[in-house]
Length: 75
Image 1 (tube, rainbow, N blue to C red):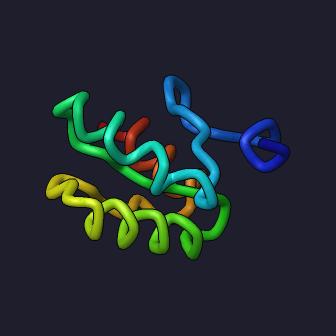
Image 2 (image 1 turned 135 degrees about the horizontal axis):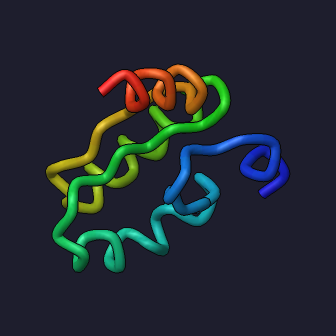
């Protein structure tokens, strides 16, 4: 939560990596692709793996949020 307060992508949801496995069913039910990101990209890679292991097929590691945000804004 502290990291999320320092910066995040507009419209994103904060789900700490330690809670991601418990929220996988909720994310899966949404039917939407999931893009994980964090400050550095390390935790987001771990979150992606957890979600894949929970059966979510469309999950992508966006890496560090600031870099991902720049890419999104260029689109």
